[in-house]
Length: 90
Image 1 (cartoon, helix red, strand yellow):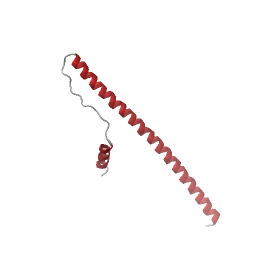
Image 2: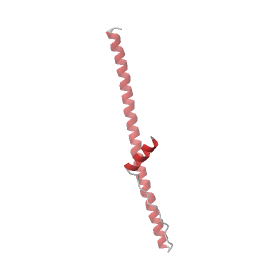
Image 3: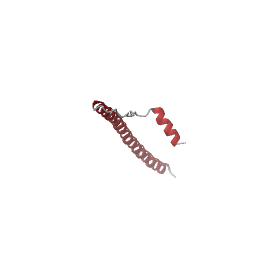
């Protein structure tokens, strides 16, 4: 194989690698945006559900009914997430 042939092949491979890198980078960007969106929605849902629970308990107290105990929700900690991740991947 001659030097110009090798240069053409290397140029084609470099082009493919660049395409893969760009595609991979774009995919990571989209994935990161979806993860951030999910984190925001999760935090809003947890806050909203906790507020509803407190409001229902307040209404029940106001009506003279013994309030139902609502378990407050919390976003999982990194330690909890890591433990589940390790369990699923072992």
